[in-house]
Length: 289
Image 1 (cartoon, rainbow, N blue to C red):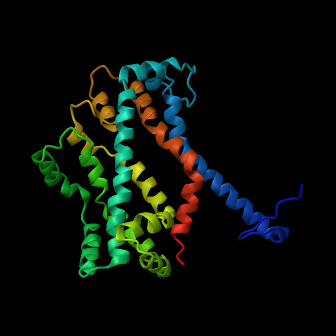
Image 2 (cartoon, one colour; image 1 turned 180 degrees about the horizontal axis):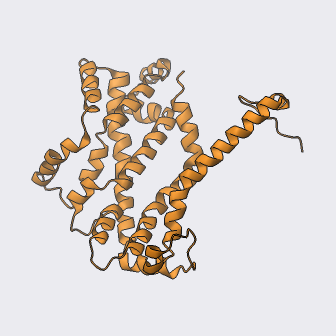
Image 3 (tube, rainbow, N blue to C red; image 1 turned 120 degrees about the vertical axis):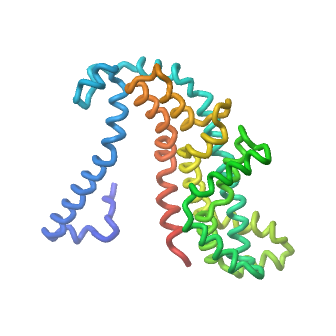
């Protein structure tokens, strides 16, 4: 089997120079240090979950005295988080669909159609990026209650369907698409919506993947709006359930630590599944032409 040739900034023939080998070793060492620093909090939380309350409070050891999975099983049953997982998945799924559909349509109008007044709308969208999202919580919550959408996932979905950052990402990507392909589709008789769904979206898989990943991460970790909208209901997400669980008097520090681990499992699984697509799509989005 032929040896694979190294390509990139440092190639095989560069490794013959002692200075390059030393620099390459330093880079690998620094990367290893960064990996350890990044993974240590995650490993510490998982290992701390195996400790009981006495060991968790008094011991400074990283490794627990015993690895008993019953501790996690007990906290799982105490937390009753299985239903909250389903609620979070429904919230995330709807948020991703709305983030792609509504923001993509607005980006299509501002980046490709460009009707009269689109420049002013684009400036207003960018201006909204300067405003903290927390200042809109009160009027948003009041409007949600007035239209009777409390205890529903719909407000959570629509909030991600009106995201200025996603709109700007779509606009920048759509402006880089070849105009000849869009003109050819219109000559063939496609309507504007047909051009969007049949031509633009299939060509926009890289930016759609990036926006979907951002939406998944934001929707899963969102707490404030789901807490206000779904508080006290049967539709609580994982983050809301963890907060309610932490306020219960029967909860100890070790049980709370294990509950945090349950909230981290889905994002970690998604990262390992889609890490290749994430890096490839992020690079392709950053390169125009």
